[in-house]
Length: 425
Image (cartoon, rainbow, N blue to C red; front, side, top):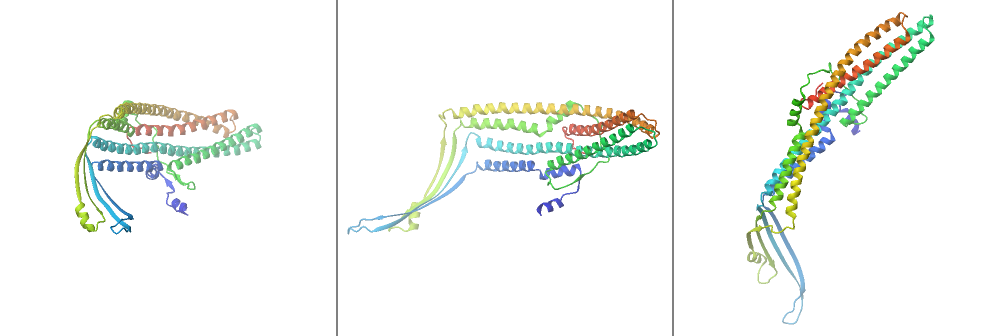
């Protein structure tokens, strides 16, 4: 019942922006990263609170019993009550700057948690865009293949008429029927691919399994666009991509770890104070009188100086230095990977647009050749082998055209995405 209500709340038709908005709100990985950021924010509050004094209270109440010897020789059993009550507070005044370093580090870790979310958003955006365009590709391919099947069925019908009057041989009619069966197979394959592509998008959006949906088709799909110089896009990616910023913050975080390790060589100065009182059963004094008499106050400073730590501090400093070097290597590796990824995207755009231009020309000429062969078939003067060859070339060119168009559309959007352009169809 709950699943039915959740399905009813979902739209029947999705646009690309609808898919992206839904994923940004409900994606499990994204929400998990958001919770991680919230946890980091709590770490900041805890780190800041470490500079404040603490306050603890304690109370001990005890009851003891035993026999007491009196002057008359009697040893009656008596119960004696006693208690201790205190309030204690302490705070760190100086610790070599470790508390401030820790606060700065926790702030940076929270920023990294936010950048992890942004990086996940980027990854999801690319995957959803690719899946969405694959569905559009499959839908368009179905439309074209259906047209081919319709044409093939008409050609078989006409071939049957020619065979009935003796214009073509049975072999030619069988070849037309075989071609129709092959075209229907292509249609089934295209429909299966469409269903598979929809499943991929559904899985990316983490939609319920029983939910069926359609996607909006754009009026036009831009397959050719201006390709900006590679270096310009790489520079923009270095300045804006979250993985680079996260790597840079990683170096700062490691440097603060080093500063905290060095702070352990400094003395720690702390202040403390206490208030307390106690009482024990005494016939000569009342409970509250004893508390008043035993009430005490204490305040003081404590200086702790590290003299010999069995190499703990030195080891922590050396390991922190290594961590700084490792974080710099991670940053350099991230920059290298991003540079290579952007360059690959640049090459993909160039190749895809060149393939699209070639596919347009190929489709133009094969379509004309197929049209001529079809006209020859209609008047009964076509060579069946040549006709079927031209038809297969046309189908191949058509599928290459559709594939290259959507591939070009995808690659240009991914390339632009690396320079911060939002994905739109």
